[in-house]
Length: 103
Length: 271
Image: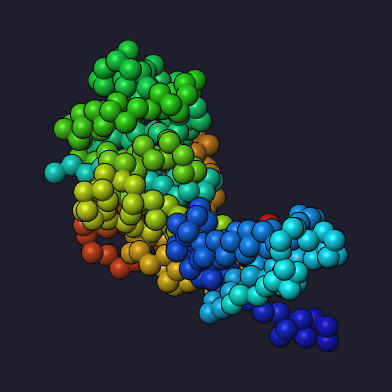
């Protein structure tokens, strides 16, 4: 019984490989492989610059997640904003959003 | 009209050197004059696969630096008279491959041979770039496996942007050679199929080389598979690929092992 159900349940891995490659290469072809012109990498850099301008950010307290999909990619930057006393002089605390999402 | 062909892949271990030896030998066996140039400076192996490792006196770097002339460095194959080999240096640095030096050697080889086949090292560094720079055509060797396909895609990008042809705005002919292919695993859906790889890389297919023990046996004895085991499935696939390279229109098929009943029974018994 187990043998039979395994036989029917087992899905082939080649289509998974093909789909993964198609998504990956679609991104790599745009960036030329070096990530220099990658929109998401640029967004990440600039968002971090803006946050740093207003908040003294501890690098360990920043979580960055990236998910590249076929139609839609997400860059999730999660910054733990320190207490008001840590806010850089002149900055408005309301500007520093705890989470920036970009599709 | 002589052709400069680069055999490249990005990824290592997919069969560039085996392919260089087999395609070169097949073209020479069909009467063309062929020279195989090893660009893998520091890790040369084409001499070993060709069974010429004990005959190397001078190499590509010696010729580039003027320590030897081309005629002194070329090793003539003993089995196929129209086939020659220019080995890479085992001891020198890749930086010894100067652009001017390589250009001069390739120019000289063009005058002497119908086919100049450059065996590229793995990677995308100087050696690989030098190997592809002067190419008129490229054979991209790919295994039906994700990392190989990804690296091939990268190499195709480089062929389209960093070669002499690309810089002149001319077209560089690219051909995909799928190696180590296992039709059974592909039909079970456990290996990327030919269609999958072709769809992803979108360059024309030169041939499909089935996974075969004959390839290893041939390299063990130091002969291209088309010479060592000419009747094997892999050798026939390489022979067909060479004819397509030379411009023949042949339908791409996957040759299978020709086995007698006895072989078949015996094989079943041991496995």
